[in-house]
Amino acid sequence: MAPFLRILGIETSCDETAAAVVERDAEGRSNVLSDVVLSQLDEHSAYGGVVPEIAARAHIEALDTLIEEALQRANVSLADVDAIAATSGPGLIGGLLVGLMTGKAIARAAGKPLYAVNHLEGHALTARLTDGLSFPYLMLLVSGGHTQLILVRGIGQYKRWGTTIDDALGEAFDKTAKLLGLPYPGGPEVEKAAKSGNPDRFSFPRPLVGEARLDFSFSGLKTAVRQAATEIAPVSAQDIADICASFQKAISRTLKDRIGRGLQRFKTEFPDIEGQPALVVAGGVAANQEVRGTLQALCGTHGFRFIAPPLRLCTDNAVMIAWAGLERMAIGVAPDDLDVQPRSRWPLDSNAEALVNYGKRGAKA
Ligand code: KG4
Ligand code: ZN
Image 1 (cartoon, rainbow, N blue to C red):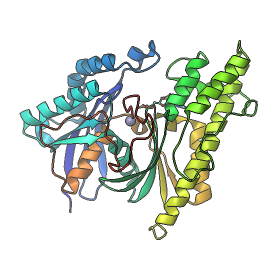
Image 2: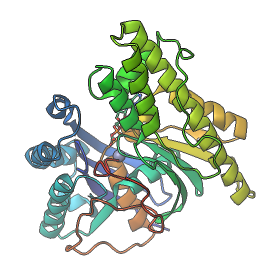
Image 3: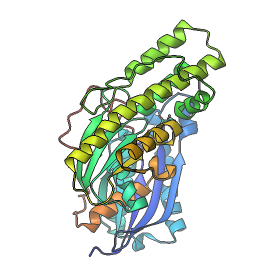
Image 4: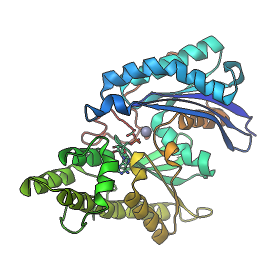
């Protein structure tokens, strides 16, 4: 039986600085003692996106205090944790360096083992922390930097079934918002505008729909939005609402087709799975009600359980990094050497080839 373990987690791969203390008991149950996240949104919003240099500096300024706060809130000292887990990729290299170096320094000074965690593994294993999910299951990660459908077979056993060949879904939302003059981050703004729009006014493309491969493509959709907006310029508030509603409808239809095929493939590959199969969603786009509704309905149709962890744990946080470290430690995976290097690109599935432009934004996950 695995021992009771407690880990300090550190996350700095993009524009959130985060630290958390999490426990795992012998039965694999989690207990989040603290969860501190500092978003850099205000620092980047004027630029319409994340500026790597600003992000790295902001991580340096905030991280030490944040770690102290996480320990204090958890009411533990470094002596009380069994290990340190720090994100070491994929992500923006400056931020990764800050978090991983800090993790190494703490590990060295406190004489604790260090786990260099893949950020995507953090997202992939979160549903085990929140819902005690057993392997195997499917995970859809839809964030500002990634759109991936991943088969999670076990700790360290991931197979990427699909990925975007161009823009990530969150990126498509952000770019659409930008060209309509809506503020950054655009996803929530597009969703808000869509509420009073006509989803049938524009017929936007549904890329790759009908194809057997499970990949995604969203850049054509963005181009179609630009064309539509240019043709009817100047756009009124109602035009913007209609474009947003039509854009979301195209996305919803695309997801229905792509993910529907993924669920079918899962059932074919795992016909004898114990209990109900599950689809887990993670990433900021999981906040979108239409996306959620589409996935939920799809799961209903295919007999899958739909798991959407609380938004705080769907978006970037250090709890998931601590948990990924705990999961590895619990099954006896050796800690990393202190000379481990950060990796801006680090696919979860090491056999999966990078597709066109994959991870071009610096693998913001
Ligand atoms: O996971 P996340 O917080 O950060 C990373 O990308 O790491 O995801 C942010 C992305 C942004 O592209 C944002 O526009 C999108 O998630 N997003 C949404 C919504 N809320 C956030 N997209 C659509 N609808 C939303 N309500
Ligand atoms: Zn992420």
